[in-house]
Length: 442
Image 1 (spheres, rainbow, N blue to C red):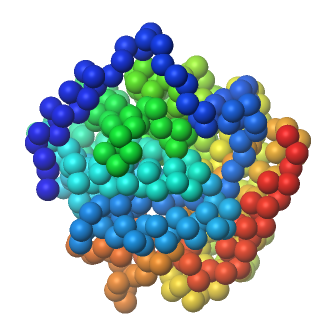
Image 2 (image 1 turned 60 degrees about the vertical axis):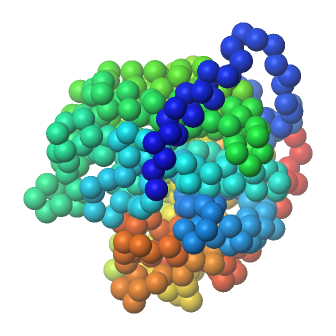
Image 3 (image 1 turned 90 degrees about the horizontal axis):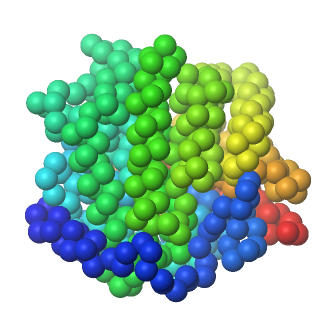
């Protein structure tokens, strides 16, 4: 699976890259930041987006992937007005439970087959005028992530998420060691250089020259630690990692945006100052926020009817707080993850999604209101598109070797938050929002 010549090939490709100061034609179509707005070729860029973390796996050749399904999924999403996809461009081969296989890399080399899968996805997205946001590692265990990098350099020590022997916040606090481990960060930065500096084998275009890539993201949901005391203590190392990695990416891909992938307040010890610091670097182009009322206890999963109104009120307030922080920073804001369970917390594709539909309307209304007022909130990506994917097992659990690929990652029940192609009411809401955004005059 792992091609150990890949590292040498990546270094050779980097050596062939023109120097940063060398004149180069500037292609059109890149998403740019203009103050608190995003633009393309001088026009406002606002979007309806989705998370499709598994797209590169579908893009692989042969039995491991399903390129025909990938094309169908992209066609359906484009038809619904979705123009922005947030994707995993990472997965570390991991000893952690529930971590996805195959992975993009092991400790010493990279998986060229999966990287070609990503090449294929980006080529297909470009054909449909879609933009990609690519995250480069993960705070959580389901794709290996920072805990795996640490295990590679600390003699194999790690903690599984939700291990009863190490209750929360042990996992998050252990993971914070990543930011102060020079060896772990060096391995991660090697991967950043190789992927951001890659040349697409399908199109022949360098990733850094591809306007289909809107932004590189440091990680999925990075946070400094678990509890607030440790978050505050770890801020210097966390902020140094953010600034240093963002600067590295900008040196490799100066035409593309960089974002943190932060949840916002919930990933920052509920501290406004920490959210501001996390997004203050001049090399971080926009603010991100994620909203999970069910995971955070706002929505009681055994009493959705009785708690839905309050959960949605808290979510609207959460958005308002992040709009205010984006305004203070003078940067755009994207709600790049938001999810809500199906009625009665069921997972089946035919289960009703009445409460979820209302939640989607709230998020979409906030984006539309901001866009109409010229505010910083410019787009959203729902979590997550499952499309044709269906749970393989009656218990809705992912098992090693599964290749159904749903929006719910391997550590979660398959069908929990995913939007299926048969979710007509949800898809109608997405289409209506896309039409409303398109109707707003610049």
